[in-house]
Amino acid sequence: MRRDVFTADHEAFRKLARDFIEKRVVPDYPIWEKAGRMPRAVFEQLGSLGLLGTAIPEEFGGAGLPDYRYNVILQEEAARALVTLSTVRTQLDVILPYFLAYADDAQKSRWFPGLAAGTLLTAIAMTEPGTGSDLAGVRTTAVRDGDEYVVNGAKTFITGGLLADLVIVVARTSTDPDNRRAGLTLLVVEDGMPGFTRGRILDKMGCKVQDTVELSFDDVRVPVANRLGEEGAAFGYLGRNLPQERMTVAVGSVAQARAAVMTTIEYVKERKAFGTPVASFQNTKFELAAMSAEVEAAQSMIDRAVLDLVDAELSGADAARVKLFCTEMQARVVDRCLQLFGGYGFMTEYPIARLYTDARVARIYAGTSEVMKVIIAKSLGL
View 1 (cartoon, one colour):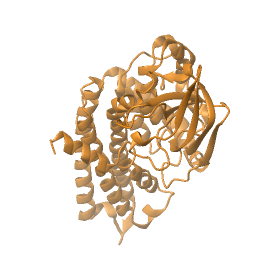
View 2: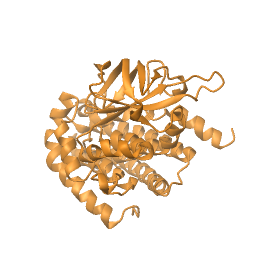
View 3: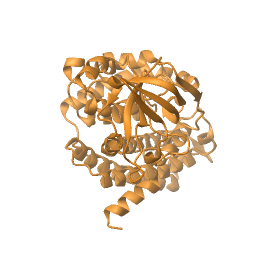
């Protein structure tokens, strides 16, 4: 269906991204899957082309264009090529907004040039063992000691934590028995700070090119100059970025579902059963037709929400609706696509297998489908 989301500038950016992904990412992607990460050099190449710094002010090496549509294009082009860009999505869509919104002038001068250039990699450490969706239950502590905070605690499921130079840590700086959400603070822990260690590299069923690790903090001294925003205000900061974080997952879900349909169409045209192309069977045609309709419906929903997000009008409830619908759609479509591959769909040499395993986490991170339903229900007065 016709889309009216992007301008000529966006399409020029799309061409640049598409060329880079086809030439630099696709050929080496199987190697990165086995290694469990994308090389740092590739982040730097993305940065040198201006693909990482669109939202960063020009004075720090960026383009000064805080337009989420550029982020959408990167996801769409990676999915189109049946690859991912490792932790780029997390860095641009989830982490960078905190730096843009809350970094002071000194922090901008220290960190923004490296973020735009791809020489500084980032992660955000929210989840802890035993505290997933309940951020108010964070137990990692940060105790003020003069011009430093002393941080102690552990985090898990940290995307990009292995290579990160800067880790935004959600830590508890005070406790209010009457308000569990109060007293959380964002602190930027830098690679090499004594007491900051990386634990296990977690072995996931999907998203193999995204390194995911455990982190621990043992009396890590973090300068007050590394605090993002005000002390005790982190819960509010985290809530304000949730619509974009959830949109990011939904955008990826639709792009990957579309890629699954396209690669399945190619496969069934070539694959024969009983001497006839699988594409000629009515069931195949009906299944792909129905899946195409689902993808287009989700795409229309995404495009409307993207424009609302760019205009700062996307509500938390609408972001939840979009994430719920698009991730559940992705699960249905990718599963049905894999079925059309038959036994070969179960083989990892075919991209549909990776699309299938990668899709499963979309209904979990950035808020589970169940949490999305709670948010939507509240918006209905229920």
